[in-house]
Length: 256
Image 1 (cartoon, rainbow, N blue to C red):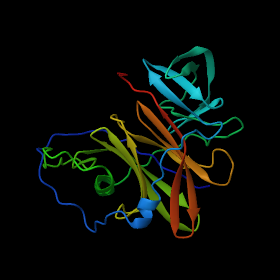
Image 2 (image 1 turned 60 degrees about the horizontal axis):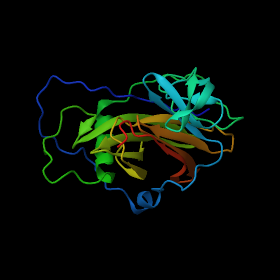
Image 3 (image 1 turned 135 degrees about the vertical axis):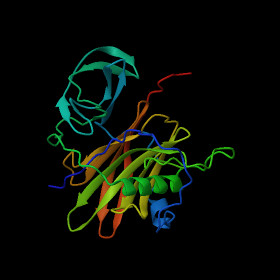
Image 4 (image 1 turned 120 degrees about the vertical axis):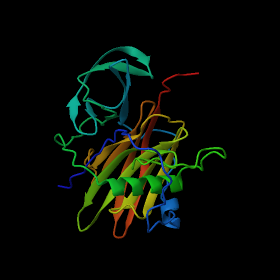
């Protein structure tokens, strides 16, 4: 079985900021990567759902009875009427649960989280920088010495995803100026092969690792923040990786 890995990055400091040079080799996203950036559909693929957390309560929007987080999954119970985020109050949700599977789907057993090397995290930050909208004109050009913070990008996750008969790849997520991005890169985070951007998301953007949750022969994964959940189907063909959106949910933390 292919085993994905997830890394949630925590900020750490202590050293003064310094100018840094982009790691080499550094390549802009290819035309194929740009073509693989899929926009959210007008409607959610039947059966999928999301969880949003408010004041330690998970609110379920659509989906069946199995909720999935980065490391764990569980069967959940709901009660009451939709009150928050158009969802119903949920009990038994896994820690950081965000994706709700269609009825009849299965989730993998609990997953461990091996560390990702710091230099790959830094390279992932630069790949995210290449696909996110440019920094503001007056934004500081001083880059943090933290690998997960480069050119204003806050890296949320770097998930190593194995493939059968092909080299592994990385799924990385990050946010800059309230726009999020998810990228597929090679195992060294030196080349972007597919990406998508998510507007109006300001908090840390994390990954729920890839797995064939619905049993259709293709793996699915999701990215989530406090105010957004987007689910993707991963299509793998020889020499090519693609992501297509199968669900998109949002719930502003501070609605206007």
